Length: 281
Image 1 (tube, helix red, strand yellow):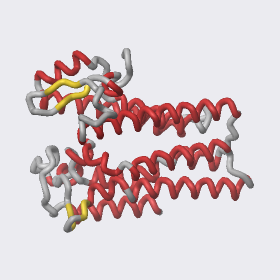
Image 2 (tube, helix red, strand yellow):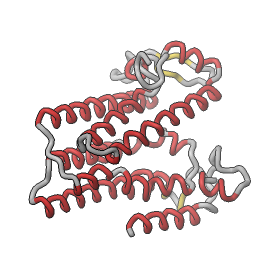
Image 3 (cartoon, helix red, strand yellow):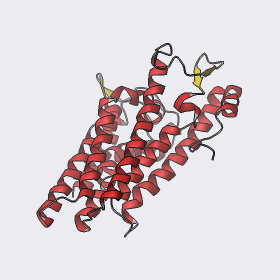
Image 4 (tube, one colour):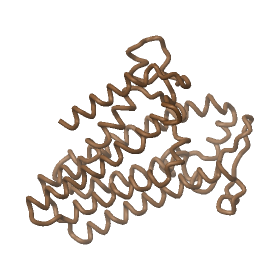
């Protein structure tokens, strides 16, 4: 019922936002009403100064994700009389991920979703329904299949999550700070190439390892969530499979957009930073 209600609210919000002209998105103005409605005609629809897209990207879905996780942990406690270490790790990892997104809210302003994608049903449905009801699949699975992980395995999963998070946050913070203040002592050592557009492309630090090292780190965190459920079923690994496909598609899309944007400078950049997602691959 909650999933259906969230989907309906996503549809209603898209209908309301469709006529709120702010700035056209690149892909949602084809002339086909159905396609433009799905992809999003408007880039950043607003009611006054209230940005609908940024709000939906950050708040209802992400907070709902944590709330549903906690509800699953409570249900497991009711059924079992205790909360397993696997459930505790899943809830902890998800909470850290959401807290990070909310704390570093300003960093979202330079992401593809905000800068390029339209505010259509695809994005609204993803924010309001897809995120809170599919990203909680591990917690939901552990309600019906409680699993107490061996200490060594729990520690391994925790280390994987920690490594992924440190790489994810390190790469994103380095990029954000470099864009705001390239002369900051924290990023002054980072090498870069100047482009004909007047911008700079980093070729060392985290961004010298791979062009989207943050995507790889993000996926490693997601894999650690799935590993908390063990290896008895494929369902908990839905997120890692889906997210891996999504990130590969995003990498290809970003590459095409950057090649069009930077031209020969992008080819020069790719010659220096050779790897897309994984070093040496």
